[in-house]
Length: 123
Image (spheres, helix red, strand yellow):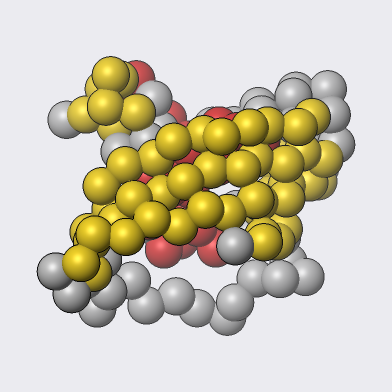
């Protein structure tokens, strides 16, 4: 199976390792793995990688009929292995109610206890 975050990579060689145990070492890898988690409806992973100050109590992706079509990284600022904060701007393409749409977001990430967490975003 191709990885949702990058169709040139296999899921098992890309995001699967993050979804099942290994923490991403950069903010961009966390962002990509979170996008893939939305596609695959991995609610536990999304909640685990959300900063506690902004984390919702629960997600309900099982009833969501959004069809995710692709991800494009626009830019990254900081967010490398030695950083403690980072920013990733991306465009996610999706289909809802038969309409193809795009969402552009600038997400902020912070590293806490050695693990990157999603903090907030501007859409």
